[in-house]
Length: 179
Image 1 (cartoon, helix red, strand yellow):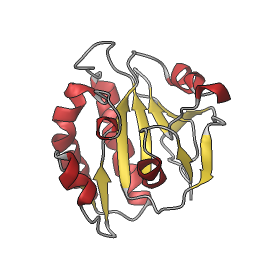
Image 2: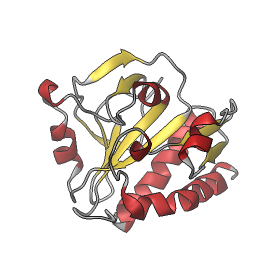
Image 3: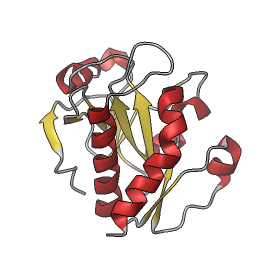
């Protein structure tokens, strides 16, 4: 499985569990809580003592970085099961709630989600805002489900700004997938 061609910076983290045990059928965007560059975000995961990582990151300028190969499970959403299935993406954001993201970051997130769906043979990105309904949803073979970190840990991640935009994100990605 190839990584996204949208990546402009790579610094691989040692923090991952190796090959996934489940096919990719989820995308989990996160707020990194800081208007950081891709280099700085990747640096956050270079130390094995940190016990955290992500597959991709998006810096404050919209550049995309690779931290953990997409074929491998990152340690990102406080859920082994979710991380086995999800491509995880840390996005630069403001330091305080609602953790607003710059337009460049959001645009790159849309582009990356479209790319992830296409490379994984998915024709639709699904957003279900209610945790229990989303996690019990049977993802069809041509679908990708959006999940959020707050469903698996006592965190506000990805912040209310992005959480409120996830329906729009799915709609934008789906309109581009249909083209």
